[in-house]
Length: 419
Image (cartoon, rainbow, N blue to C red; front, side, top):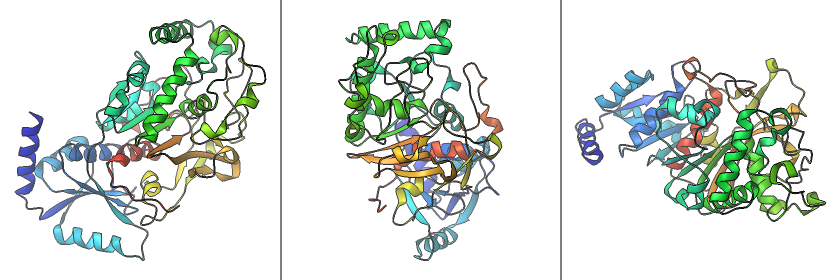
């Protein structure tokens, strides 16, 4: 049925002979719903039509083939658009191609298949990516440890990790929530799942999962992580073969002097960090800036870096926005200590005066990864039990746009970056 629908769709589009185009502007002045605009772009790609992403042109606009069905979909979803002539589109592309401007037109070819790594029963508002994918009407599938260990990641182009602890320490919630019913139940379920998968400890099961995810990226996958999934993932990789868990987490003591056994060469992004030994401290390591930062909410912003669209299209794609200044937001892992980031990793968003990186990107093998600090771009502190974020109130959120840039990233023809 889907193939028939695509054929009919293509017939409708071809009847226009591409004499005109739909321009979806992404600037602050003319776009009423930036987030759903990504959904329209994905929807078009899913119908096997190509889209041009106009990097640095009016906030990173999208150029689509004109068809009444696309116009109608934009109207239904509340996305601002302009119908422009073939001549106007050609002129825009000619202007963008000029060496004098920092712009580029990147072809998006195929809708990526998306997987969200999440346990059964997690509330949708506990994951900013799940919320924004749902809001933007971009389809995704959920997977967890069992699917990852069965190599089902190979079925997907893009993987998201969020508020997860790959070290087996249950998010370091022990001091505040060890008596809470949800903590006790989550711990029990994690132990039962690890046993089902053939592991004696949750930490061993999570390491096995982290290694599979590593292999997925090295083999050419795209991985996007937020909040504690960023640093806990790297810590788990660097502690392979080392017990860093105290008895309340895994039933036995940690290895003596385990800090000296950490292997930073195994990580994606971080180096030289010091692990937090105490189970009573809500922190994994010195990577996270949450407890070190001294900044008031009213002035908590981070700046997006500017790259050459023609020479460095990858980071340019990932930083497309209608503003270069984005509101900060907290999380278990809020941001990253600047001098504990490897030199081959790009810092794409930072608060320089505070010495912290918020948004980073790198290459691992044939694949790519992006780490984004914080939990929810429109919920500054987001504590356990807080109500969900209503994205209808934030349809132009710059912080959420960064997530959706990563969602479309695998659809693009890749050029080797120069930075």
